[in-house]
Amino acid sequence: MRTITLHTQSTEQIGIVEENGQVVEVVFDRPGESARIGSIYKGKVIKVHAGMQAAFVDIGYEKNAFLRKDAVPWAKDKIESSLTEGESLYVQVLKEPFDDKGAQVSADVTIPGLYTVYQPFGTSVSVSRKIDLEQGKQLKEMLSQVLEGTEGAIIRTAATEVEVSVIQEEMETLKKLWTTLPVPKKPQCVWEDRLVPDQLLRKFPVHTIKQIGVDDVQVANKLRARFPGASSLIEWKKQGGSLPISQWQDALTSRRVALDGGGELIIDRTEAMTVVDVNSAEYQSNKTGKSHTYEVNKQAAVEIARQIRLRNLSGIIVVDFISMQDVSLEKKLVQHMKKQVASDPVKTSIYGITKLGLMEVTRRRDRNNVMDLLTEPESRTYTTDTKVYRLERDLLGLEASSSEAILLAVHPDLYEAKKRLLSQAISSKIPQELFVRQDAAILDYQIELEGSEDMVREAIMNREYCVDNLF
Image (cartoon, rainbow, N blue to C red; front, side, top):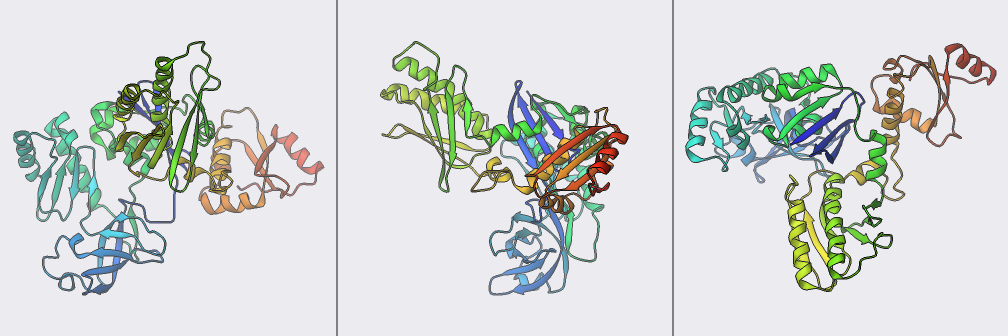
């Protein structure tokens, strides 16, 4: 069984997944400027290209989105007879913008739930191939009675784990969500499929989740309404966990991971692949021999599989285990590694060990890996955006402090980035009086003083600081 903890009070949303008491995923979701996969836009057809049998749609960004004919459910003939320039329509992002290309979209809009997917223009009901034919037929007949006109749906595998009434309730919720979408005058996003919490909650079958902890009462209530089938699992709980978020970021961006017994993993990324080296130099044991080396490699394999998932590594992954020089033990290690990655929701393949003793692994790209999201490519220092979110989280963490006032010094670049990233003032979220001054000599930010309001004001006056109360 697994538990999911959602940190939603800061602008950067974070989801932590635990399985059998161990953290296996830490997901960071921050607002971005590009169209994200799954989000729905009210768009405007700018050009219909008969030769390409496609259309270009303005969805509110610099680059127009690309809409193929086969992604328009009502386009039975040529696309020019189905769409007209200047026409407004809803589209959903299939592929995010890349380089100089706009997003790729579909007019076959879907609203996903835990057990079903609602398709306003789907016209039919599809059933997961993993569902028994007879049971699928019954579910299909039941859901067809709820749908009208051009509506369609997809029945997910998880639907077999709940009562029919739960499925019907979810479908009604999804239909209501669709009918209440805003109708803006200009092209823009009308519904965003957030990585946290929406996509994360749908990632796992509901019957495998023990608890969904949310740190905000209002968000918890919204999730209960959005996912009625999981409402009993959603609980409000104060922020907490095995490590503060900032320490998780430090751990997930470190290239060294300690192993029990003294060994360590060295994880390095290149443009082409990720390389993991099992270093046993510090391993505390007097045992030697191939069988002992195999046991050390087995232990390392468990942590490697965990780190691949935690860091969301993808593409080609090469693991340099300790050399055993024994083909039979190498085969056993490959089978052991396959068992470790079997529980990963993202498809991971183990191809074997090369003549050089390197294990070949591939993992499907799911989203940006943690290292690329949190750090700069060259220096691997935190990006300015990450520093802003860390600062916000640090200040929110002082909510329980007995201090009446806080004096904060920030670098001017960080000060400007904060205004760009955070729509709501941090000072309005904490009980303390916040005084902020800009200082180019500060590397990032520094809490200079905490205490009574009189003491902080006196220090500001004596040091002749120019401060801002709204930050």
